[in-house]
Image 1 (cartoon, rainbow, N blue to C red):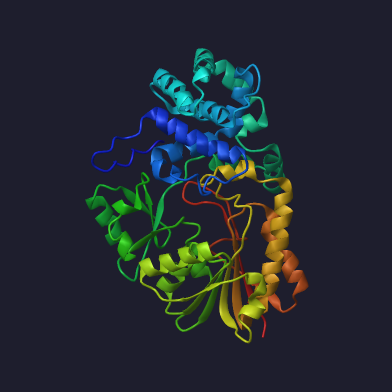
Image 2 (image 1 turned 90 degrees about the horizontal axis):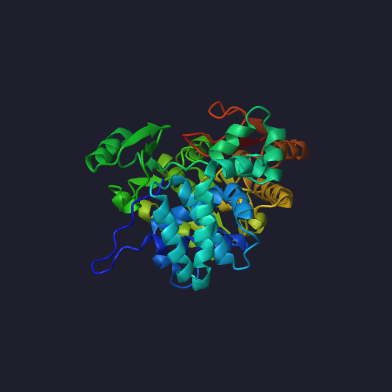
Length: 431
């Protein structure tokens, strides 16, 4: 689904589809070169990249396994120019949803010229029109390959098959879907029902999800959300909204939110309890995101820039009654929001994440108070980062026990239409 273009300031025209295809393919080309989709673009590019161009890039990356295989069949030899090749991928993905397919082809030809590849316009035209002449044949051929059919790398597919027999195909399907936009209502300022009515008043359809959430029928800019700038609502997936309540925070408690950026969970903790919150984040840039998020919500907290693996030195002599560890992970549960992850990750990355997660658990356990609780959280669906990680930790720590969480069963939440994939384990320190 492609959103409406954000209105341009007075006196400026809206970008043409050719410009959108060109901007999107530049971003996809950067992913093919190893950069994340959200990485800082070249100077000026962020200003020009509209919501439509961003969605063009996301759709091409969601469908990369298919359109890459199609391109291999349609091109006589590989294209050396990465931006031109990305343009072919983005255009093939756009053709899947286009009603006016020949317009897409014509605009893709113009986009080639915008890339400085005017001599390649005939090539782009021939490749896309060749696809339109026999889409069923080509799509069937591509679907015979697992990457083309499931739109994930083979190693990823094999890991899910091993971990979730009978469910792996559904997980992959959700990973290829467009992610919903879900809001978390700040119940200190309004109620879910009341905010839902306010959305309806401005023509935004929504439905309740979970205890604090509203899932929008269609995504929209945050500027269109009533009271967003006043902290009445935040954008947060329904699965992520569970973390604050699972930690069992109460008024007056000393709480550490480790790996806090961008600050959504920190804000939710303060919405639920008048606690003494410390938010810890590694990079200065991401620390500023936490500060901005808390400022918008109207909360005060201690925000510390530092490495959570050095928590013992950062908080010498200090102990926290509750700790939230939102651990860095493969992000395999949120690939529908970040489709570049599927193609940037490598099998060896999972082991590296697992090592870092174990180091974080060990460091933060040292600053947890007796009888305190630590919530280990990831947005992963790979067992090595989740259940296996927690079992290994419990094996090393006789002073730790895992508490039951009825809301999430064994802790693994698989992605579905209402939420992304997450994992939670609540660990208690025995006095």
